[in-house]
Image (tube, rainbow, N blue to C red):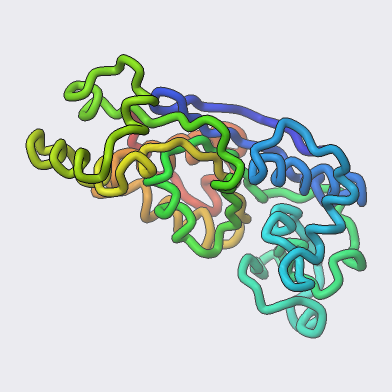
Length: 272
């Protein structure tokens, strides 16, 4: 019930994928499938052996409360927020639009198992990103977006971003092994002697390491994608983050131009 819609490759080994989670809350089976899909990235797995067992664990993983993975299961209802005050938690990611629909996610509810299913929703955009660690904070800082990152505990073989500023100085041969061995002092010296952008060197090899990240939000809620693109498509935004945001906006406009114009507007999108 969840599926890949489109993909844009970025940088040397990164990518932006747009996923269809519109039916992720259409049944118990679809909820289980959606949770497993998100958890696979968090745990760096190709598959989940027992998705049902995992799903029920995620419903109570955080001291009896649902895991952030459950935020990726969208809930849309015609009843206003007042009707839900005694039933939902004081989490983020909720909005009542001018159309009278209440949009949130399954994690908000005290008892997710009692929440009614939605046959389909419109405007809940879910992205899977492969990006350098140094850009992750620029995305997760937008606190109304749901985010779930690959756990450091499950990294098996690190890959490192290859920005031209550094490859011109260090070369490309055996790149991953070379970057892995460099100390923070090495990066500081390289930055100073060759006037390299500090965002590429201040976090050392870890900042250049690729990671994976799920991101989701309702386009109807102006505190999510509207806010994100307003900030991250500006020219003063770091090159890597602007590239990521541009690709995400391109995918939204390509696959749902009507909603993009209605809720985000016709923006000038900088492209690399």
